[in-house]
Length: 448
Image 1 (cartoon, rainbow, N blue to C red):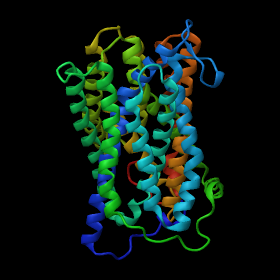
Image 2: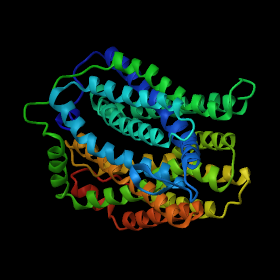
Image 3: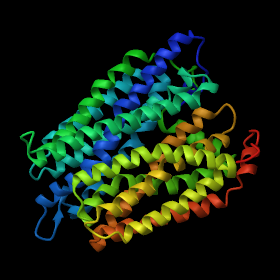
């Protein structure tokens, strides 16, 4: 989180930089399978069923003596994992800047997460506590590793190449997620033919994501290079660096206003991603193969939606396009509340709606924020952006879990997330982005 990530790439040979870039892409290829197969598809419904099997007669489990409705356990675990990640990232980021040994820290985070994911094979019976612990470790490690991975981008690509390099990594991740989901679907739907139970098939899918993560992480770890520590005194310890960045941001209140709007609606997006499979499984009674197919549809349409929204942004401006996507998110969730149980076709329609706005709303938000960052402070602001992003994304899962705990209805829990998109829409609509860009010291595009 210091000037280590701000420096332009050294005068390495073009061939060496291309080799590092190709290695960098493969970390997205390695870890995106965890996000897709584990967090989005399998773990939510499976861990919920494990918690339900361990629940008392009233449907509650009691981790550390705290009564928790079994249906809320996964959402609470996701929320806790985000809090752990937020507490860890400033410490690891400062250590990476201070020592210049970013790659060993990336390796430690990646293999901690991959090991915890592989150990999910042992989640049978009523081992809900083990499941919650492994989820917290894997998800927090994934967040820390992604922070370190993203910080390599300014070092391996000059400014004019960063959009293209970043987009290729993003595409690699979606390709890997789709490929492994197809294999998971074959195993899950044909588990009898493979001689395994449905539960064992799910546990194999969970563990194989960890093995995939660990195996392909070797490629970036072999090809990426450490550049040495930041300039003496440039990297402050841990939370002091984050505090210094936040103090500097106070001189750009309109940038902070946009960041607040983004944090609110992005929390809603992240919660929908992590809780949709639980909603489809427990509230709508859909099978795992339907959920896998729906997530595959989201993966494909997210790319198409991002490209389409990019063209809309060129015609109407990024802010208006994002506001339109937030309206689409609101309508999609409202429609989700009324979905009939046991009707896969309507769930696929919901997945299509999510896919069409998912990639574009996030990609345009990042590009719009980049216009609001003062020149020379790109990495510093984006480091705080990453930490702040994770820092808010515990609230949505917590709200989802609390609403279900109070009402016993996943429909009430899913509709509660509309608040994030409505509030985010209002906050973003109030930001004068052209003035915000000018006050940050950047040239104002003709259409924004």
